Image (tube, rainbow, N blue to C red; front, side, top):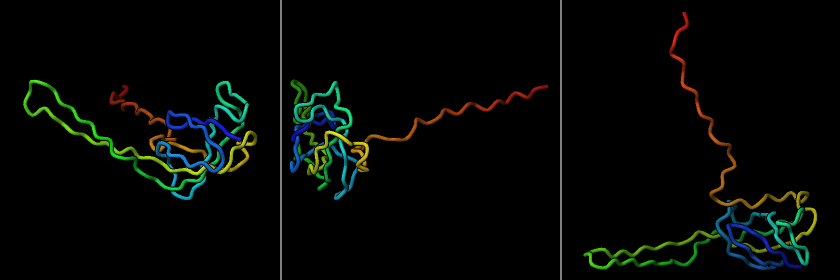
Length: 134
């Protein structure tokens, strides 16, 4: 059975045993993670998500992608050439299970992106009242 999952702003068609490179997740090598944003399982389409479906995967490693080099040159100016490089941080996963029912009963932690914070927004302090009542 296959599923289409959504993570890191991208969609992946997966089945058990597949190896994926996804945007960096907040998990260490050897951890099991669960994807709950499932768009399609087998022939079941979600509207927009399939309820109570999940894909479980095991984290193999945290890796970096190949370096992407960009070269910028502007005409008619001296020394306006610039080379920049970027290596995207990725997580290497092996899909273990595709479940169409029972996602909330598995006990596996949900896959969370590395930059996502689960903390509530900071509260704004009220200024101290310096006026003395007479």
